[in-house]
Length: 132
Image (cartoon, rainbow, N blue to C red):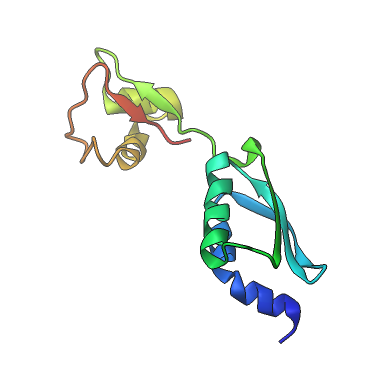
């Protein structure tokens, strides 16, 4: 097994964590007999999660160079929301956002904690997620 494969195997849990997060790897190779990992994380939290995993694998990480920068442009957009006003219905809200009231099931699906079906009651002040 060559050095690159050996180090990838050692830090596989770190690489798996990166795959499941809003992190882009720009470089992954061996440099100076160490695994060189360089990329961008969507948030400081995502970056810290990677470092915490690295320290679990090897607290000294003497065979790893990790250069992660925070790039907030990688973060997923905040979901669009709508605050219900008096006189609203799911049909009216769907008409407003989608141009077709029959699209209201999309709003129901996006709010499983608040809406069960088309008979769910909405009240002024309720904040609903409205998917794009």
